[in-house]
Length: 193
Image (cartoon, rainbow, N blue to C red; front, top):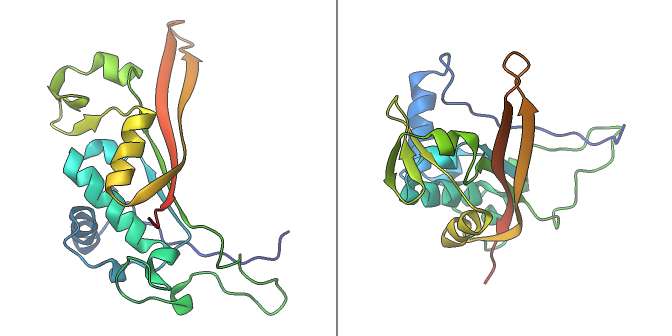
C-alpha cells in the first residue's frame, strides 16, 4: 500500500446510460466549444480509440481540450482556462496517508489508437482521404503512425514523451487464423516552448 489517495474523473459518452446532457457536454469538449473549466484539473487524460473516430481538425481540438484539462495547464501561468488550482485536484491526503504526488510531476495525455496496417485498416472498405476511412456504419476511423500522432499532438500544443507502435498477435481458436493487430501508443505533456 502506497498510502496515496487518488480520484478519477471518468466519462464514457458512448454508453447507452449516459444522460443526454453528458453526451452533449462531451461533444462540446471535443469540438472545443465549451470552456475547459468544466473539467476538473487532472494529472492524466486517457484517450483510448477516441482520436481515430474524429476528423483531423477534431483530433487537434480534442487534444487541445485534453491539454487544457491537465493540472499544469491550469496552474502557474499555463495555457489552460478556468484558473483551477490545487483545490481542483482530485487527490487529497487523508489523515494517515502520505501527501499526493508532487505538483512538479508532469501531467500527461496518454493515447492508444489504431495504427497503420492494423487488421481493421487492411479490411477498411471506404478510404476518404489519406489514412481516414469510413466504416460501414458511417463512423470514421483514422489509422495513425507514431510520427503522425506526434505531429497531431504538436499541433495541439503537446510534446511527445513517447510515441511507438504496439503490435499484438492472436490466434482465433475456432478458425486457427492469426490476427495481427497494430496500435499506436503515445505519451504527451504540455509543450512550454
